Length: 105
Image (cartoon, rainbow, N blue to C red; front, top):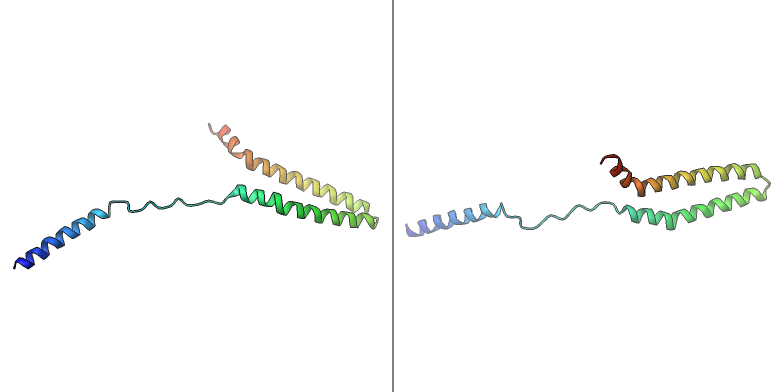
């Protein structure tokens, strides 16, 4: 009989402790990590863009040596307009937070 009372008391105490442990934060959950956009932009600017520009240069020189100057000029103009759009997008990417704060304050 005494053993039964001891087991019941221990069981009640253990369940009370386990119930209280549910309310304690045991470990803080780590913050979700976002995409490192600055790293992505710097990678494209330092690795990909020079390769693409070099390929365009080789294509333009090859066409110019064949006498297709009008095609080279057209392609060059298209490439310059494309680079202007890319530069505008990069500018908005870096200045965007400032513009949003300026509009919504």
